[in-house]
Amino acid sequence: MKKVSILGVPEHFNFPWQLAIDEGAFEERGIDLEWTDVPEGTGKMSKMLENGEADLAVMLTEGTVKSMADGNPIKIVQEFIVSPLLWGIHVGAKSGFKEVSELRNATVAISRFGSGSHLMAFVHAREQGWDTTKLKFLVVNDMKGAIDALENGTADYFMWEHFMTKPLVDNGTFRRLGDCPTPWPCFVIVAHERFIREQAGILGHILQTINAYTEEFRNIPSIDRTLANAYGQQLEDIRKWLSLTQWSTSQIRTATLMGVQQRLMELALIHEIRPAQDLVHS
Image 1: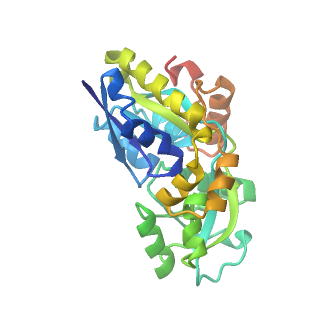
Image 2: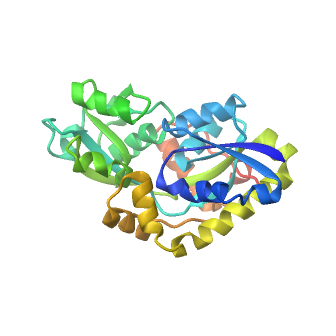
């Protein structure tokens, strides 16, 4: 049995992985796939891959591109979610902010630098016409840190996935002022270059297995109820999320990668645009 380690956020996007692991789909191919939840997100996963703590990860597209630009020896092996991620823009329930426009000079809570919450704050600020060089950040690591920061006023707003954060809006912990969808497909499957070199065959089996699950995922009886129970969501919210979410079984498009790099370059988050073939494993 070949042991392979993979990282991902503990969110509904990744439920097909858990399902495949629980049903022994990888074991049938001689693979002991060890999943680790990383609630801190893409910034933390990037560092773990760079440090050799894992072989694979499911990471945000923009964070992956940024990490590769910073020298991380990883490559995109496949697109995972082709639809955008809907980033909710949240403030504390008792915050005096009422409109997104009021957040121009506010402090953003982020899980860590290089994370989606960090990079998308730049994308959102640019879309609002704000001066992105004046953005201020507070690293809060995870959701608990964000809740604390918004409650005690050390940060003013926090961007996180709309539906996973909605229970905190429903119970009055957060107020959502708006949403900011990613201008690109949101999640990719990433591998360390060492793993690609040494275990290309195993990688192929892993991708074939997860693709079989994502292709049939929507057709699983009562999958909406299963997801609602697993993630503490309202059934109507899960159904809406499912209607907006599209898994992929293909490699990310060259035009998409060039577009992500161009946007990050404009925001001074990377310093060069690399050929798409340098960023992907085909």
